[in-house]
Length: 131
Length: 419
Image 1 (cartoon, rainbow over the protein chains, first blue to last red):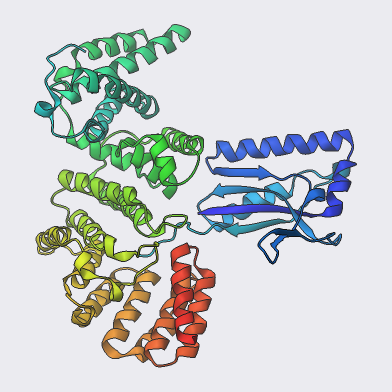
Image 2 (cartoon, rainbow over the protein chains, first blue to last red; image 1 turned 60 degrees about the horizontal axis):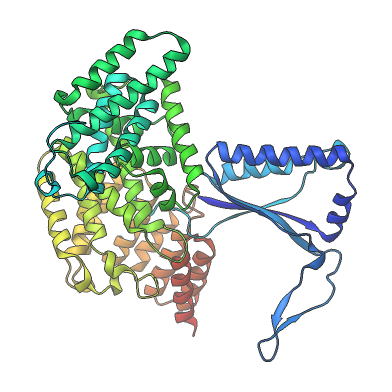
């Protein structure tokens, strides 16, 4: 069963992250490397992508002639996707465990980040129809 | 690698890839039995297969391809042990033995039991289902790691890691490479059959992305079931499982439309069903049923056969299907069986009976949140002449399924009832 783990943050979180101390940043980077290594070694890794910072994010809609129309400034409270991981695991519980491990990653001032991680099952995954 | 080479048409009619996959478990079984190191043996046999893939198309398939592969694999093992012990300065007698065996291996008899022991090892209950599936496809099915990875839509490195961890689990648990005793054997066979069933099922129903099924895994499931039946011709559940696979897979071409949309049984073009495969499934089942105890695979196959034998949906012998589900329900405490039983009951005694049976499943936590409960309820409500409620449950089911074509199908049903 494949699950996507999505890390979201408000626009302001990126600005705060940019101001972290060297130690905090280093701890966080090391944690992310370790986390990625664990996913690979346990044979559950499928995909991951980090996204560029949301300063330049645009919402695009088609205008009258189908040309792209981008709207204006986002409210500060808007949530942006920071990055995602796709994992292939045996159960939802296992996906939640991995998500909790990610959420426990170190944040500012040496405290746990406790980032909310959205967990969703990916369509097309396995389910048993029969016995 | 001496020996007379003959044209491969003479040696075997199989293409090289298929021939190798046929021989892999036999050779691997031999190597594991000899050296008692599954992990290393697996690598050695893979390496031998690679040599074969490179040499055979050029030089022709050797007249005894199994002996050829075994010899190369034994040499690879000998090289491995030699370099290990060169580092560690011990186990010299093992090296000598390996080297000697490598030169005299051509007369090693293929042990049919080896393949079965190998299968039991790969499907050991200590492994998680996904590990057992991966290991079985690689060691018994002879698929490459890349092929297995692409079938399950994960990166090759991830699949390699999964297989390697599975081998470590086997190593750590100290499972001996030998045939389990009679009591243990039936338990292990059951778990092996379940793994084959999951492989087939993954190919048939699950699949990812916009495509409803992945033919290769269904075919692989069938191929492995045929292999096990050759090794255990007297076990009626093996025949039952193979029959179930054939009778289900026979409807493959009718099961989806041009855009991968799902077509339910009642609306399928039955002319597209594979009659030859149905005949084979029915014959297998007919020879298995009278032989001994009737197990769940045979009953499932019998149900599939009743469907397959109906020329039109209205010709379906629902009372017989209901009777079979009643037997099956008594045999296994499986909520999916109970769900299918409810459908059959509705077809025989009317939708009200089916809906009552569904209510009984409400408190079963294994299935209460499953989309199929809602999908079946929707179908039965529609039968009962309540399109509004039916549409509501079709939509609820669409919200819960994790299969793309299934979601589209369910939403279409809801739309059809409300338009």
